[in-house]
Image (cartoon, helix red, strand yellow):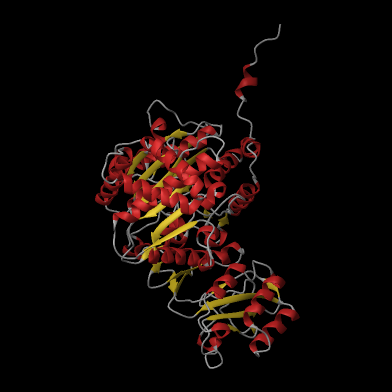
Length: 622
Protein backbone atom coordinates (compact mmCIF):
# COMPACT_ATOMS: atom_id res chain seq x y z
CA UNK A 1 0.00 0.00 0.00
CA UNK A 2 1.37 3.42 -0.99
CA UNK A 3 2.07 5.75 1.94
CA UNK A 4 0.74 9.31 2.07
CA UNK A 5 3.42 11.77 0.83
CA UNK A 6 2.87 15.24 2.29
CA UNK A 7 5.78 16.67 0.25
CA UNK A 8 3.78 16.11 -2.91
CA UNK A 9 1.03 18.46 -1.73
CA UNK A 10 3.20 21.15 -0.21
CA UNK A 11 4.25 22.19 -3.70
CA UNK A 12 0.75 22.30 -5.18
CA UNK A 13 0.00 25.82 -6.41
CA UNK A 14 -2.19 27.31 -9.08
CA UNK A 15 -0.81 26.71 -12.53
CA UNK A 16 0.84 29.75 -14.10
CA UNK A 17 -1.57 29.79 -17.02
CA UNK A 18 -4.04 32.41 -15.78
CA UNK A 19 -3.36 34.68 -18.75
CA UNK A 20 -3.99 32.01 -21.38
CA UNK A 21 -7.19 30.98 -19.61
CA UNK A 22 -8.47 34.54 -19.77
CA UNK A 23 -7.58 34.88 -23.46
CA UNK A 24 -9.36 31.58 -24.16
CA UNK A 25 -12.41 32.82 -22.25
CA UNK A 26 -12.55 35.95 -24.41
CA UNK A 27 -12.03 34.00 -27.63
CA UNK A 28 -14.69 31.51 -26.50
CA UNK A 29 -17.23 34.34 -26.59
CA UNK A 30 -16.33 34.98 -30.23
CA UNK A 31 -14.35 38.11 -29.40
CA UNK A 32 -11.01 39.22 -30.79
CA UNK A 33 -8.23 39.22 -28.18
CA UNK A 34 -5.48 40.67 -30.38
CA UNK A 35 -5.69 44.24 -29.09
CA UNK A 36 -5.62 43.03 -25.50
CA UNK A 37 -2.56 40.88 -26.23
CA UNK A 38 -0.82 43.79 -27.95
CA UNK A 39 -1.40 46.19 -25.05
CA UNK A 40 -0.38 43.70 -22.37
CA UNK A 41 2.68 42.64 -24.35
CA UNK A 42 3.83 46.27 -24.51
CA UNK A 43 3.04 46.80 -20.83
CA UNK A 44 5.01 43.84 -19.50
CA UNK A 45 7.97 44.79 -21.71
CA UNK A 46 8.27 47.93 -19.59
CA UNK A 47 8.81 45.98 -16.38
CA UNK A 48 12.23 44.35 -17.04
CA UNK A 49 13.46 47.80 -18.13
CA UNK A 50 12.82 49.10 -14.61
CA UNK A 51 9.92 51.26 -15.74
CA UNK A 52 7.87 51.15 -12.55
CA UNK A 53 5.28 53.79 -13.39
CA UNK A 54 3.49 54.20 -16.70
CA UNK A 55 0.05 54.59 -18.27
CA UNK A 56 -2.15 52.42 -20.45
CA UNK A 57 -4.61 54.62 -22.34
CA UNK A 58 -7.61 53.79 -24.50
CA UNK A 59 -10.91 55.37 -25.51
CA UNK A 60 -13.84 55.55 -23.04
CA UNK A 61 -15.71 52.24 -22.69
CA UNK A 62 -13.44 50.48 -25.18
CA UNK A 63 -13.03 47.26 -23.20
CA UNK A 64 -10.43 48.36 -20.66
CA UNK A 65 -11.95 46.20 -17.92
CA UNK A 66 -11.33 43.00 -19.92
CA UNK A 67 -7.81 44.24 -20.59
CA UNK A 68 -7.24 44.83 -16.87
CA UNK A 69 -8.46 41.31 -16.05
CA UNK A 70 -5.96 39.85 -18.52
CA UNK A 71 -3.20 42.19 -17.31
CA UNK A 72 -3.80 41.07 -13.72
CA UNK A 73 -3.62 37.43 -14.81
CA UNK A 74 -0.35 38.08 -16.66
CA UNK A 75 1.21 39.85 -13.68
CA UNK A 76 0.27 36.99 -11.35
CA UNK A 77 1.70 34.46 -13.82
CA UNK A 78 4.95 36.41 -13.76
CA UNK A 79 5.21 35.99 -10.00
CA UNK A 80 3.60 39.16 -8.67
CA UNK A 81 2.06 38.43 -5.28
CA UNK A 82 -0.37 41.29 -4.67
CA UNK A 83 -2.26 43.23 -7.32
CA UNK A 84 -4.35 46.12 -5.99
CA UNK A 85 -7.03 47.47 -8.33
CA UNK A 86 -7.98 51.05 -7.46
CA UNK A 87 -11.33 52.49 -8.50
CA UNK A 88 -13.08 55.83 -8.16
CA UNK A 89 -15.01 56.43 -4.94
CA UNK A 90 -18.24 55.12 -6.44
CA UNK A 91 -20.05 52.09 -5.06
CA UNK A 92 -21.67 51.14 -8.37
CA UNK A 93 -18.33 51.28 -10.19
CA UNK A 94 -16.74 49.05 -7.55
CA UNK A 95 -19.57 46.53 -7.84
CA UNK A 96 -19.43 46.52 -11.65
CA UNK A 97 -15.70 45.92 -11.85
CA UNK A 98 -15.43 43.46 -8.96
CA UNK A 99 -18.29 41.45 -10.45
CA UNK A 100 -16.62 41.41 -13.89
CA UNK A 101 -13.33 40.20 -12.39
CA UNK A 102 -15.07 37.45 -10.40
CA UNK A 103 -17.16 36.29 -13.33
CA UNK A 104 -13.96 35.86 -15.35
CA UNK A 105 -12.92 32.98 -13.07
CA UNK A 106 -9.51 34.52 -12.41
CA UNK A 107 -7.42 32.88 -9.70
CA UNK A 108 -7.26 33.92 -6.90
CA UNK A 109 -10.80 35.12 -6.30
CA UNK A 110 -10.76 38.95 -6.24
CA UNK A 111 -11.55 40.50 -2.87
CA UNK A 112 -13.08 43.78 -1.81
CA UNK A 113 -10.64 45.46 0.60
CA UNK A 114 -13.17 44.97 3.43
CA UNK A 115 -12.74 41.19 3.07
CA UNK A 116 -8.97 41.55 3.50
CA UNK A 117 -8.76 44.04 6.38
CA UNK A 118 -10.46 41.61 8.76
CA UNK A 119 -7.85 40.74 11.43
CA UNK A 120 -8.48 37.03 10.91
CA UNK A 121 -7.26 37.24 7.28
CA UNK A 122 -3.53 36.64 6.83
CA UNK A 123 -1.84 38.00 3.73
CA UNK A 124 1.12 35.62 4.05
CA UNK A 125 2.78 34.61 0.81
CA UNK A 126 -0.42 33.81 -1.10
CA UNK A 127 -1.49 35.56 -4.31
CA UNK A 128 -4.05 38.37 -3.88
CA UNK A 129 -6.25 40.54 -6.08
CA UNK A 130 -7.64 43.34 -3.92
CA UNK A 131 -10.16 45.99 -4.96
CA UNK A 132 -10.26 49.35 -3.17
CA UNK A 133 -12.02 52.64 -3.81
CA UNK A 134 -9.96 55.83 -3.93
CA UNK A 135 -11.39 56.87 -0.62
CA UNK A 136 -9.11 58.13 2.17
CA UNK A 137 -10.63 55.95 4.89
CA UNK A 138 -10.50 52.81 2.75
CA UNK A 139 -6.93 53.45 1.59
CA UNK A 140 -5.72 54.01 5.15
CA UNK A 141 -7.15 50.66 6.24
CA UNK A 142 -5.63 48.89 3.26
CA UNK A 143 -2.24 50.50 3.86
CA UNK A 144 -2.32 49.33 7.45
CA UNK A 145 -3.16 45.77 6.40
CA UNK A 146 -0.47 45.59 3.71
CA UNK A 147 2.25 47.21 5.80
CA UNK A 148 5.49 45.28 5.34
CA UNK A 149 4.45 43.79 1.99
CA UNK A 150 6.65 45.48 -0.58
CA UNK A 151 6.63 45.17 -4.38
CA UNK A 152 2.88 45.62 -4.76
CA UNK A 153 1.47 46.26 -8.20
CA UNK A 154 -1.23 48.92 -8.37
CA UNK A 155 -3.57 49.02 -11.37
CA UNK A 156 -5.31 52.39 -11.10
CA UNK A 157 -8.56 52.49 -13.09
CA UNK A 158 -9.60 56.02 -14.14
CA UNK A 159 -6.10 56.92 -13.02
CA UNK A 160 -6.34 60.63 -13.82
CA UNK A 161 -9.12 61.07 -11.27
CA UNK A 162 -8.13 61.71 -7.60
CA UNK A 163 -4.68 60.08 -7.92
CA UNK A 164 -2.72 63.11 -9.29
CA UNK A 165 -1.27 65.51 -6.75
CA UNK A 166 -3.51 68.57 -6.96
CA UNK A 167 -1.28 70.43 -4.47
CA UNK A 168 2.01 69.90 -6.29
CA UNK A 169 2.70 73.58 -6.91
CA UNK A 170 2.14 74.37 -3.25
CA UNK A 171 4.82 71.93 -2.14
CA UNK A 172 2.19 69.69 -0.54
CA UNK A 173 0.71 66.26 -1.26
CA UNK A 174 -3.02 65.82 -1.78
CA UNK A 175 -4.65 63.18 0.39
CA UNK A 176 -5.40 60.42 -2.13
CA UNK A 177 -2.10 60.93 -3.93
CA UNK A 178 -0.23 60.52 -0.67
CA UNK A 179 -2.13 57.38 0.34
CA UNK A 180 -1.62 55.71 -3.06
CA UNK A 181 2.06 56.67 -2.86
CA UNK A 182 2.24 55.04 0.58
CA UNK A 183 0.70 51.90 -0.88
CA UNK A 184 3.35 51.80 -3.61
CA UNK A 185 6.22 52.42 -1.23
CA UNK A 186 9.70 52.44 -2.73
CA UNK A 187 9.37 49.14 -4.63
CA UNK A 188 5.82 49.19 -5.97
CA UNK A 189 4.77 49.30 -9.62
CA UNK A 190 2.15 51.79 -10.74
CA UNK A 191 0.07 51.16 -13.89
CA UNK A 192 -2.48 53.88 -14.55
CA UNK A 193 -5.37 53.03 -16.86
CA UNK A 194 -7.45 55.83 -18.36
CA UNK A 195 -8.98 57.33 -21.48
CA UNK A 196 -7.68 60.77 -20.52
CA UNK A 197 -4.00 60.67 -19.52
CA UNK A 198 -3.21 64.39 -19.86
CA UNK A 199 -3.44 65.11 -16.15
CA UNK A 200 -1.11 62.21 -15.30
CA UNK A 201 1.47 63.55 -17.75
CA UNK A 202 1.29 67.24 -16.86
CA UNK A 203 1.20 66.43 -13.14
CA UNK A 204 4.10 63.92 -13.24
CA UNK A 205 1.87 61.62 -11.21
CA UNK A 206 4.04 58.97 -9.50
CA UNK A 207 6.83 59.93 -11.92
CA UNK A 208 5.11 58.03 -14.74
CA UNK A 209 7.31 57.70 -17.83
CA UNK A 210 5.27 59.37 -20.57
CA UNK A 211 7.57 58.04 -23.29
CA UNK A 212 6.71 54.47 -22.22
CA UNK A 213 2.94 54.78 -22.29
CA UNK A 214 0.96 51.92 -23.81
CA UNK A 215 -1.89 52.37 -26.27
CA UNK A 216 -4.90 50.06 -25.95
CA UNK A 217 -6.78 50.19 -29.28
CA UNK A 218 -10.58 49.67 -29.26
CA UNK A 219 -12.14 46.47 -30.56
CA UNK A 220 -13.72 46.12 -34.01
CA UNK A 221 -17.31 46.67 -32.80
CA UNK A 222 -16.48 49.86 -30.93
CA UNK A 223 -18.23 53.14 -31.69
CA UNK A 224 -16.18 56.04 -30.35
CA UNK A 225 -14.97 59.50 -31.24
CA UNK A 226 -14.74 58.76 -34.97
CA UNK A 227 -18.47 57.95 -34.92
CA UNK A 228 -19.87 60.47 -32.46
CA UNK A 229 -17.43 63.34 -33.08
CA UNK A 230 -16.11 62.95 -36.64
CA UNK A 231 -13.63 65.55 -37.87
CA UNK A 232 -16.28 67.08 -40.15
CA UNK A 233 -19.67 66.68 -38.41
CA UNK A 234 -21.23 69.03 -40.96
CA UNK A 235 -21.01 66.17 -43.44
CA UNK A 236 -23.41 64.15 -41.30
CA UNK A 237 -23.20 61.64 -38.48
CA UNK A 238 -24.21 57.98 -38.22
CA UNK A 239 -26.71 58.55 -35.39
CA UNK A 240 -29.51 61.00 -34.52
CA UNK A 241 -28.05 64.35 -33.43
CA UNK A 242 -30.49 66.95 -32.13
CA UNK A 243 -28.93 70.35 -31.42
CA UNK A 244 -30.74 72.63 -28.96
CA UNK A 245 -30.60 76.43 -28.69
CA UNK A 246 -27.69 77.58 -26.55
CA UNK A 247 -29.93 79.54 -24.20
CA UNK A 248 -33.11 78.64 -22.37
CA UNK A 249 -34.15 75.57 -20.46
CA UNK A 250 -37.68 74.93 -21.69
CA UNK A 251 -38.95 71.53 -20.40
CA UNK A 252 -40.39 70.86 -23.86
CA UNK A 253 -36.90 69.92 -25.12
CA UNK A 254 -36.53 67.19 -22.52
CA UNK A 255 -40.08 66.02 -23.22
CA UNK A 256 -39.41 65.75 -26.97
CA UNK A 257 -36.22 63.80 -26.32
CA UNK A 258 -38.20 61.50 -24.02
CA UNK A 259 -40.87 60.93 -26.67
CA UNK A 260 -38.19 60.23 -29.28
CA UNK A 261 -36.63 57.65 -26.93
CA UNK A 262 -40.03 55.98 -26.48
CA UNK A 263 -40.55 55.84 -30.26
CA UNK A 264 -37.10 54.32 -30.87
CA UNK A 265 -37.63 51.64 -28.22
CA UNK A 266 -41.07 50.85 -29.62
CA UNK A 267 -39.68 50.49 -33.15
CA UNK A 268 -36.81 48.25 -32.04
CA UNK A 269 -39.05 46.00 -29.96
CA UNK A 270 -41.85 45.70 -32.52
CA UNK A 271 -39.93 45.74 -35.82
CA UNK A 272 -36.31 44.77 -35.23
CA UNK A 273 -35.68 42.63 -32.14
CA UNK A 274 -36.60 38.94 -32.07
CA UNK A 275 -37.50 39.30 -28.39
CA UNK A 276 -38.16 42.39 -26.32
CA UNK A 277 -35.10 44.25 -25.01
CA UNK A 278 -34.70 46.94 -22.37
CA UNK A 279 -33.03 50.26 -23.17
CA UNK A 280 -31.83 53.26 -21.19
CA UNK A 281 -31.88 57.02 -21.61
CA UNK A 282 -29.30 59.12 -19.78
CA UNK A 283 -30.34 62.63 -18.69
CA UNK A 284 -27.16 64.53 -17.82
CA UNK A 285 -27.88 67.63 -15.77
CA UNK A 286 -25.59 70.23 -14.25
CA UNK A 287 -23.67 69.36 -11.09
CA UNK A 288 -26.45 70.72 -8.87
CA UNK A 289 -28.53 68.00 -7.21
CA UNK A 290 -31.54 70.34 -7.27
CA UNK A 291 -31.45 70.13 -11.06
CA UNK A 292 -31.59 66.33 -10.87
CA UNK A 293 -34.77 66.65 -8.82
CA UNK A 294 -36.32 69.14 -11.23
CA UNK A 295 -35.66 66.94 -14.24
CA UNK A 296 -37.03 63.94 -12.36
CA UNK A 297 -40.26 65.85 -11.62
CA UNK A 298 -40.69 66.92 -15.26
CA UNK A 299 -40.17 63.40 -16.57
CA UNK A 300 -42.48 61.90 -13.95
CA UNK A 301 -45.20 64.41 -14.84
CA UNK A 302 -44.94 63.40 -18.50
CA UNK A 303 -45.17 59.71 -17.65
CA UNK A 304 -48.16 60.31 -15.36
CA UNK A 305 -49.99 62.04 -18.19
CA UNK A 306 -49.34 59.18 -20.62
CA UNK A 307 -50.62 56.72 -18.02
CA UNK A 308 -53.92 58.59 -17.66
CA UNK A 309 -56.04 59.00 -20.81
CA UNK A 310 -58.40 61.27 -18.85
CA UNK A 311 -55.70 63.85 -18.28
CA UNK A 312 -56.27 67.10 -20.17
CA UNK A 313 -52.82 66.87 -21.78
CA UNK A 314 -53.03 63.20 -22.77
CA UNK A 315 -54.49 63.80 -26.25
CA UNK A 316 -51.86 66.38 -27.17
CA UNK A 317 -48.97 64.21 -25.94
CA UNK A 318 -50.28 61.11 -27.70
CA UNK A 319 -50.69 63.03 -30.97
CA UNK A 320 -47.18 64.45 -30.66
CA UNK A 321 -45.72 60.95 -30.23
CA UNK A 322 -47.81 59.63 -33.12
CA UNK A 323 -46.59 62.45 -35.38
CA UNK A 324 -42.98 61.73 -34.41
CA UNK A 325 -43.46 58.02 -35.16
CA UNK A 326 -45.09 58.80 -38.51
CA UNK A 327 -42.28 61.13 -39.53
CA UNK A 328 -39.57 58.61 -38.69
CA UNK A 329 -41.12 55.26 -39.58
CA UNK A 330 -44.13 55.94 -41.79
CA UNK A 331 -47.86 56.43 -41.27
CA UNK A 332 -48.66 52.72 -41.49
CA UNK A 333 -46.50 52.00 -38.41
CA UNK A 334 -47.34 55.04 -36.30
CA UNK A 335 -50.45 53.51 -34.69
CA UNK A 336 -48.63 50.34 -33.64
CA UNK A 337 -45.70 52.26 -32.16
CA UNK A 338 -47.95 54.55 -30.12
CA UNK A 339 -49.92 51.52 -28.89
CA UNK A 340 -46.72 49.81 -27.72
CA UNK A 341 -45.67 52.95 -25.82
CA UNK A 342 -49.01 53.41 -24.08
CA UNK A 343 -49.27 49.70 -23.26
CA UNK A 344 -45.81 49.69 -21.67
CA UNK A 345 -45.50 53.16 -20.18
CA UNK A 346 -46.21 51.73 -16.71
CA UNK A 347 -43.03 49.68 -17.07
CA UNK A 348 -40.94 52.84 -17.15
CA UNK A 349 -38.13 52.85 -14.56
CA UNK A 350 -36.42 56.01 -13.32
CA UNK A 351 -33.21 56.16 -11.27
CA UNK A 352 -31.66 59.34 -9.85
CA UNK A 353 -27.91 58.93 -9.50
CA UNK A 354 -26.04 61.46 -7.38
CA UNK A 355 -23.51 61.58 -4.56
CA UNK A 356 -26.16 61.70 -1.83
CA UNK A 357 -27.79 58.40 -2.75
CA UNK A 358 -24.41 56.87 -3.60
CA UNK A 359 -23.30 57.32 -0.01
CA UNK A 360 -26.31 55.29 1.06
CA UNK A 361 -25.15 52.50 -1.25
CA UNK A 362 -28.28 52.58 -3.41
CA UNK A 363 -28.17 49.88 -6.07
CA UNK A 364 -27.86 51.51 -9.51
CA UNK A 365 -28.14 48.21 -11.35
CA UNK A 366 -31.63 49.12 -12.58
CA UNK A 367 -30.02 51.97 -14.55
CA UNK A 368 -26.76 50.36 -15.66
CA UNK A 369 -28.30 46.99 -16.58
CA UNK A 370 -31.86 47.92 -17.57
CA UNK A 371 -34.67 45.39 -17.14
CA UNK A 372 -37.47 47.78 -18.15
CA UNK A 373 -37.99 48.71 -21.81
CA UNK A 374 -38.05 52.40 -20.84
CA UNK A 375 -35.25 53.02 -18.30
CA UNK A 376 -34.22 56.59 -17.49
CA UNK A 377 -31.13 57.53 -15.46
CA UNK A 378 -30.75 61.10 -14.20
CA UNK A 379 -27.53 62.50 -12.78
CA UNK A 380 -24.41 64.59 -13.17
CA UNK A 381 -20.84 63.87 -12.11
CA UNK A 382 -21.58 60.40 -10.71
CA UNK A 383 -22.62 59.12 -14.15
CA UNK A 384 -19.81 60.90 -15.99
CA UNK A 385 -16.92 58.57 -15.34
CA UNK A 386 -16.34 54.84 -15.41
CA UNK A 387 -19.90 53.59 -15.08
CA UNK A 388 -21.10 51.60 -18.11
CA UNK A 389 -24.72 51.79 -19.26
CA UNK A 390 -25.89 48.73 -21.18
CA UNK A 391 -28.19 49.34 -24.16
CA UNK A 392 -27.87 53.12 -23.87
CA UNK A 393 -30.11 54.49 -26.61
CA UNK A 394 -30.47 58.18 -25.79
CA UNK A 395 -28.43 60.87 -24.05
CA UNK A 396 -29.78 64.29 -23.15
CA UNK A 397 -27.69 67.22 -21.92
CA UNK A 398 -29.88 69.80 -20.22
CA UNK A 399 -27.53 72.72 -19.82
CA UNK A 400 -24.64 74.44 -21.52
CA UNK A 401 -21.41 75.24 -19.67
CA UNK A 402 -20.88 78.93 -18.99
CA UNK A 403 -17.16 78.59 -18.28
CA UNK A 404 -14.21 76.77 -19.84
CA UNK A 405 -14.62 73.02 -20.11
CA UNK A 406 -11.90 70.52 -19.29
CA UNK A 407 -11.00 67.96 -21.93
CA UNK A 408 -10.59 65.11 -19.47
CA UNK A 409 -13.99 65.76 -17.84
CA UNK A 410 -15.92 65.94 -21.10
CA UNK A 411 -14.14 63.09 -22.82
CA UNK A 412 -15.13 60.90 -19.87
CA UNK A 413 -18.75 62.05 -20.19
CA UNK A 414 -19.05 60.29 -23.52
CA UNK A 415 -21.04 57.44 -22.00
CA UNK A 416 -22.50 56.69 -25.43
CA UNK A 417 -19.15 55.28 -26.59
CA UNK A 418 -18.92 51.49 -26.65
CA UNK A 419 -20.48 48.55 -28.48
CA UNK A 420 -23.42 50.47 -29.94
CA UNK A 421 -23.21 49.38 -33.56
CA UNK A 422 -26.25 47.08 -33.42
CA UNK A 423 -28.58 50.04 -32.82
CA UNK A 424 -26.33 53.01 -33.65
CA UNK A 425 -28.69 54.50 -36.23
CA UNK A 426 -31.38 54.77 -33.54
CA UNK A 427 -29.14 56.32 -30.89
CA UNK A 428 -29.95 59.97 -30.21
CA UNK A 429 -27.81 62.70 -28.64
CA UNK A 430 -29.74 65.84 -27.68
CA UNK A 431 -27.45 68.68 -26.67
CA UNK A 432 -27.07 72.49 -26.82
CA UNK A 433 -25.30 73.37 -30.06
CA UNK A 434 -22.41 75.31 -28.52
CA UNK A 435 -21.71 72.54 -26.03
CA UNK A 436 -21.63 69.93 -28.80
CA UNK A 437 -19.00 71.81 -30.77
CA UNK A 438 -16.92 72.47 -27.64
CA UNK A 439 -17.17 68.76 -26.89
CA UNK A 440 -16.17 67.99 -30.47
CA UNK A 441 -13.15 70.28 -30.05
CA UNK A 442 -12.14 68.37 -26.89
CA UNK A 443 -11.80 65.20 -28.95
CA UNK A 444 -10.00 66.96 -31.81
CA UNK A 445 -7.40 68.34 -29.39
CA UNK A 446 -7.17 65.07 -27.46
CA UNK A 447 -6.56 62.96 -30.53
CA UNK A 448 -4.00 65.33 -31.95
CA UNK A 449 -2.11 65.14 -28.66
CA UNK A 450 -1.99 61.35 -28.64
CA UNK A 451 -0.86 60.91 -32.26
CA UNK A 452 2.82 61.41 -31.42
CA UNK A 453 2.58 58.94 -28.52
CA UNK A 454 0.98 56.28 -30.71
CA UNK A 455 3.77 56.68 -33.23
CA UNK A 456 6.19 55.50 -30.55
CA UNK A 457 8.34 58.62 -30.67
CA UNK A 458 8.28 61.62 -28.43
CA UNK A 459 5.92 62.76 -25.68
CA UNK A 460 2.46 64.29 -26.05
CA UNK A 461 1.74 67.95 -26.64
CA UNK A 462 -1.61 68.93 -25.13
CA UNK A 463 -3.73 71.61 -26.80
CA UNK A 464 -6.15 74.13 -25.32
CA UNK A 465 -7.83 77.39 -26.26
CA UNK A 466 -10.14 80.04 -24.81
CA UNK A 467 -13.03 77.56 -24.36
CA UNK A 468 -11.36 74.21 -23.83
CA UNK A 469 -8.56 73.56 -21.33
CA UNK A 470 -6.49 70.39 -21.13
CA UNK A 471 -6.71 69.83 -17.37
CA UNK A 472 -7.27 71.79 -14.17
CA UNK A 473 -4.49 74.37 -13.78
CA UNK A 474 -3.80 73.22 -10.21
CA UNK A 475 -2.74 69.79 -11.53
CA UNK A 476 -0.04 71.08 -13.88
CA UNK A 477 3.52 70.74 -12.57
CA UNK A 478 4.81 74.21 -13.37
CA UNK A 479 8.39 73.10 -12.73
CA UNK A 480 8.52 70.86 -15.79
CA UNK A 481 5.66 71.84 -18.11
CA UNK A 482 6.26 74.39 -20.85
CA UNK A 483 3.37 76.31 -22.37
CA UNK A 484 3.38 77.37 -26.01
CA UNK A 485 6.16 75.14 -27.32
CA UNK A 486 3.70 75.17 -30.18
CA UNK A 487 4.46 72.06 -32.15
CA UNK A 488 4.10 68.30 -32.29
CA UNK A 489 6.24 65.71 -34.03
CA UNK A 490 5.31 62.35 -35.47
CA UNK A 491 7.15 59.11 -36.27
CA UNK A 492 10.75 58.87 -37.48
CA UNK A 493 11.25 57.76 -41.10
CA UNK A 494 14.00 57.39 -43.69
CA UNK A 495 14.24 60.60 -45.67
CA UNK A 496 13.94 59.82 -49.35
CA UNK A 497 14.60 61.95 -52.41
CA UNK A 498 10.92 61.64 -53.28
CA UNK A 499 9.86 63.25 -49.99
CA UNK A 500 12.46 66.01 -50.34
CA UNK A 501 11.33 66.84 -53.87
CA UNK A 502 7.67 66.83 -52.90
CA UNK A 503 8.31 69.36 -50.12
CA UNK A 504 10.37 71.57 -52.44
CA UNK A 505 7.68 71.50 -55.14
CA UNK A 506 4.98 72.62 -52.68
CA UNK A 507 7.29 75.28 -51.23
CA UNK A 508 7.87 76.66 -54.71
CA UNK A 509 4.14 76.64 -55.48
CA UNK A 510 4.38 73.82 -58.04
CA UNK A 511 2.18 71.37 -56.08
CA UNK A 512 -1.09 71.65 -54.18
CA UNK A 513 -0.37 71.60 -50.40
CA UNK A 514 -3.32 69.43 -49.34
CA UNK A 515 -2.67 67.03 -52.18
CA UNK A 516 0.96 66.84 -51.06
CA UNK A 517 -0.05 65.98 -47.48
CA UNK A 518 -2.06 63.04 -48.75
CA UNK A 519 0.91 62.00 -50.88
CA UNK A 520 3.17 62.14 -47.80
CA UNK A 521 0.70 59.92 -45.97
CA UNK A 522 0.89 57.36 -48.78
CA UNK A 523 4.69 57.47 -48.83
CA UNK A 524 5.30 57.44 -45.07
CA UNK A 525 2.29 55.79 -43.44
CA UNK A 526 0.08 56.85 -40.57
CA UNK A 527 2.75 57.00 -37.88
CA UNK A 528 4.93 59.55 -39.70
CA UNK A 529 2.11 61.58 -41.30
CA UNK A 530 -1.14 60.78 -39.44
CA UNK A 531 -4.31 60.72 -41.48
CA UNK A 532 -6.16 62.41 -38.64
CA UNK A 533 -3.89 65.46 -38.73
CA UNK A 534 -4.55 65.82 -42.45
CA UNK A 535 -8.30 65.56 -41.84
CA UNK A 536 -8.06 68.19 -39.11
CA UNK A 537 -6.13 70.56 -41.41
CA UNK A 538 -8.62 69.94 -44.19
CA UNK A 539 -11.53 70.79 -41.86
CA UNK A 540 -10.12 74.22 -41.02
CA UNK A 541 -8.85 76.15 -44.03
CA UNK A 542 -10.28 79.68 -43.67
CA UNK A 543 -7.87 80.97 -46.34
CA UNK A 544 -8.06 77.89 -48.54
CA UNK A 545 -4.73 76.43 -49.62
CA UNK A 546 -2.99 79.56 -48.31
CA UNK A 547 -3.79 78.31 -44.80
CA UNK A 548 -1.16 75.57 -45.24
CA UNK A 549 2.62 76.04 -45.39
CA UNK A 550 4.85 73.08 -46.23
CA UNK A 551 8.41 74.27 -45.76
CA UNK A 552 11.69 72.97 -47.20
CA UNK A 553 13.31 70.07 -45.26
CA UNK A 554 15.69 71.36 -42.60
CA UNK A 555 18.83 69.78 -41.10
CA UNK A 556 19.20 69.67 -37.30
CA UNK A 557 22.97 69.01 -37.40
CA UNK A 558 23.77 72.51 -36.05
CA UNK A 559 21.36 72.23 -33.11
CA UNK A 560 23.64 71.33 -30.19
CA UNK A 561 20.72 71.10 -27.75
CA UNK A 562 18.75 68.65 -29.94
CA UNK A 563 18.57 64.88 -29.59
CA UNK A 564 20.16 63.93 -32.91
CA UNK A 565 18.94 60.33 -32.75
CA UNK A 566 15.29 60.96 -31.82
CA UNK A 567 15.17 64.29 -33.70
CA UNK A 568 13.75 66.07 -30.68
CA UNK A 569 14.41 69.37 -28.98
CA UNK A 570 12.85 70.49 -25.70
CA UNK A 571 12.49 74.07 -26.96
CA UNK A 572 10.98 72.87 -30.20
CA UNK A 573 12.29 73.35 -33.73
CA UNK A 574 9.74 75.71 -35.28
CA UNK A 575 10.36 79.30 -34.18
CA UNK A 576 9.46 82.63 -35.73
CA UNK A 577 12.24 82.33 -38.33
CA UNK A 578 11.10 78.92 -39.49
CA UNK A 579 7.50 80.14 -39.98
CA UNK A 580 8.64 82.43 -42.84
CA UNK A 581 5.73 84.79 -42.35
CA UNK A 582 6.74 86.95 -45.33
CA UNK A 583 6.34 83.98 -47.66
CA UNK A 584 3.31 82.46 -45.88
CA UNK A 585 1.39 85.44 -44.41
CA UNK A 586 -1.97 83.60 -44.26
CA UNK A 587 -0.73 80.19 -43.14
CA UNK A 588 -1.86 78.75 -39.82
CA UNK A 589 -0.87 75.10 -40.44
CA UNK A 590 2.92 74.79 -40.74
CA UNK A 591 4.68 71.48 -41.51
CA UNK A 592 8.46 71.00 -41.73
CA UNK A 593 10.56 67.87 -42.25
CA UNK A 594 13.57 67.97 -39.89
CA UNK A 595 16.36 65.47 -40.53
CA UNK A 596 19.69 64.34 -39.02
CA UNK A 597 23.03 63.39 -40.56
CA UNK A 598 22.02 59.71 -40.73
CA UNK A 599 19.17 60.35 -43.12
CA UNK A 600 16.46 59.94 -40.49
CA UNK A 601 13.65 62.49 -40.37
CA UNK A 602 10.49 63.56 -38.60
CA UNK A 603 7.62 65.80 -39.65
CA UNK A 604 6.78 68.56 -37.17
CA UNK A 605 3.44 70.33 -37.22
CA UNK A 606 2.66 73.72 -35.72
CA UNK A 607 -0.67 75.49 -35.61
CA UNK A 608 -0.53 79.29 -35.41
CA UNK A 609 -3.65 80.69 -33.82
CA UNK A 610 -5.48 80.98 -30.53
CA UNK A 611 -4.26 77.60 -29.29
CA UNK A 612 -1.80 76.96 -26.47
CA UNK A 613 0.45 73.92 -26.44
CA UNK A 614 1.52 72.27 -23.17
CA UNK A 615 4.46 69.88 -23.12
CA UNK A 616 6.21 68.12 -20.25
CA UNK A 617 9.94 68.75 -20.69
CA UNK A 618 11.04 66.35 -18.01
CA UNK A 619 13.47 63.57 -18.99
CA UNK A 620 13.08 60.10 -17.52
CA UNK A 621 15.97 57.92 -16.48
CA UNK A 622 15.81 54.34 -17.77
